[in-house]
Image (cartoon, rainbow, N blue to C red):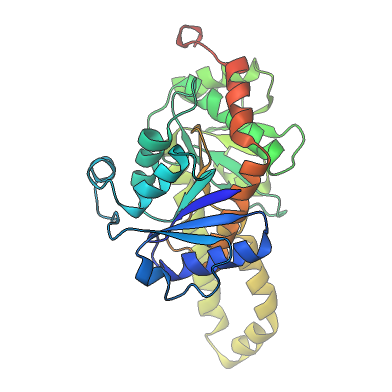
Length: 334
């Protein structure tokens, strides 16, 4: 199995990318990793080259670059060459912690869409209180969506939840402003009807306040709504831990309590860290393309590689392709 990684993408690249890649290569003996980026920078941290190769380039896409223009003009950027590895058949999948928009553009223009999928979806696995997590799509690939797009998101998310996460007959929920039938705008009302009449295990509308309670295994929404929900969850978690830290360090007594609770608090923080589940997959492309968090550490990169390996091993993309062909809907039907 071959995975290409943008070694220059992310806040702490290439160090964390290289360390995560070495750990993955040591853990999975069937894995070959290609690191794309500045060779002299990569070699500063590469202490074990077993099943790890380097494709050198001095060019990279910055976080401030306009995504589509950057992908079209910077043909030798590490992120673009990474995607090209997949297109040329030299890699089965690719990962980047770099510019999200550029990765989506490279996914569309270089890797390509699955026939029948109108819009790819950016789809992270988010934590739940019971530790099982749920797949949410879309969280920002497309801020405007049609009912057919939400239906296709549900199909792809269900396949991923079943194949990779091992959930039999995953529950699909539609993110809405209420749980009652008929709630929402025209988009959600029409999407509700499509999902209700599908072969998916559709459980109806779900509200944002119930997401972390494990209301559904797969939650679908347009990219604007999904991104707001994602950032709200992430921001709330960070704020709560900051407030808790402030309280536990406010006095000598609370510091003693903090010392006792430290292992439990570390476990809680890890449980609520969605990077533990891997990166955000771009579903709907011809091969697995994974967006790791921009601030990924070694562990986050390792988890993104683990997730990508499972997607290739479980043949998620071929299954989505075949299922989409069987379950496709024409625009006229919506």
